[in-house]
Length: 183
Image 1: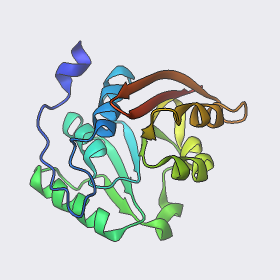
Image 2 (image 1 turned 90 degrees about the vertical axis):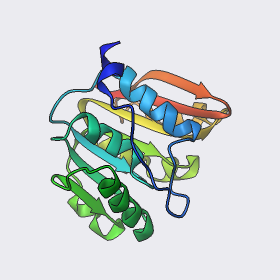
Image 3 (image 1 turned 180 degrees about the horizontal axis):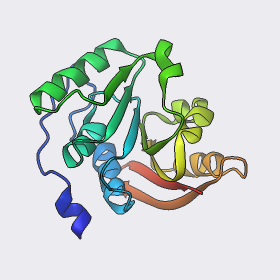
Image 4 (image 1 turned 60 degrees about the vertical axis):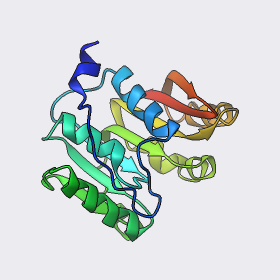
């Protein structure tokens, strides 16, 4: 498919203190759902919520060097690791913002793509913030879920007041990722 051929094949990641190497099933599933979302286009905005090493947003940036990316994590070391990976891949820092919790007020109002590859309890705790970030017609990709945890997350994120539509569930090994579209 044309989307698959447009995603770069190589991204170099230094995992830092265990912030993500790209080999985990959840990373694979998130990137697979990004391709399947058919949301890929030039000039997108992206939030990588709980970015870790930054691999998800950086893969998107390799596809679209003009996209605007916000990388958010609660640990400064994770953001330092993102900077290291940006440099390692010779990616421009233009239109990339790195944010800690004290900078949440700087988030864009809405994003074309939102990744949240974090644990179930954080997805539940941050449901309102994460779901409200997705633009109308935009994609939300959630992962970090063990198989069996997806039903509670799907129920919470498709609540009538949130207006997200479940598009696809992907499973690899013991892990699950979910793709939603904002209506």
